[in-house]
Image (cartoon, rainbow, N blue to C red; front, side, top):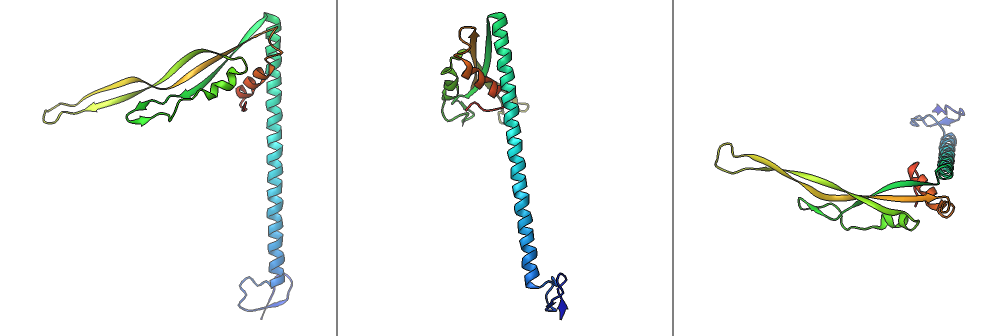
Length: 184
């Protein structure tokens, strides 16, 4: 017979851990408790980090809104610019660049008074390499360009002393996106 390394109780000689059943269960329960405590600690640290991030974002938004108010007060008006990329359902080399075109990403901006002031196409070029069989040096290259893959939509929000209070939600949404948040 062998002895339990924890409590000294006799255990089978074939018990590789040299630990009795009661001590084994207690050890495993301590390990489970330690794992639960670690998970709780990690969740709490994550919650605190997310709260701190939200507070920093709110402070950045508030500061930017304050600066915007100061600019409007000083100059009588200011303009915010924002861009949204929209994929276009074109076909390049028999591959669709998007399944369907939708203006939904800009609708949420235009509801708050943002105006579309420009569109800038995103194009893709395709290199070509052609060969003619049977002729030495018959390789020639070329390419095509200007295939529209998507469009950048430039939005503008003009802010004046008369409109700033009505536009505050649009201004805050803009700065939330600008500072790395989500205005959804």
